[in-house]
Image (cartoon, rainbow, N blue to C red; front, top):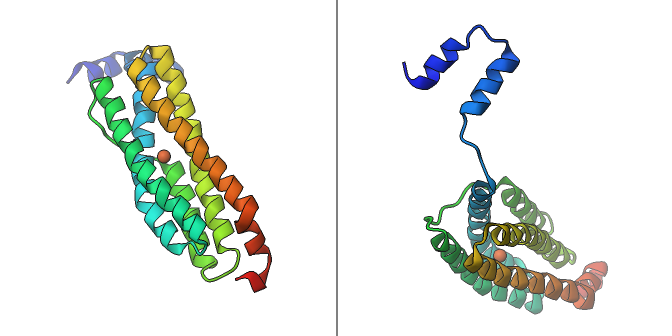
Length: 193
Ligand SMILES: [Fe+2]
């Protein structure tokens, strides 16, 4: 019987609430540094998924400008993964991903658009919107990570995360401009297809 089991049997006579309290006290306290590392793993997983989704989105896009925007962001995403490798190294951790259900869901929706709007005038508008949903998820994560890194005194991480955050915001605004200048109008008219 290990110590944990012994503690359980010692407290067998306690009510469920007290029993839970005993278990909570025994669990390792999770601090901001743990949350930072877990969230870093989440975005590492997400970036790698995005890296494999972008070529498919570029291939599906009809507008040459949208295709180019996706291809450009693929190159940036590769750099962002490298930056994350450096963030892990800066806190003496090995780069590792943690399944991020949010990005899987967002990318699944993008895939749905690709299937359901294949060959349709509204395809690009849907792809662009899916890409912006990805960017917004990333902006949220990188913003949080940068703030936490600052709080934790991880100076190198702050710089790296900030550089990526700026890139994601620039991509988001380039996509907005492209939507307004071209892609949405194209989606509005069948003749434009
Ligand atoms: Fe990214």
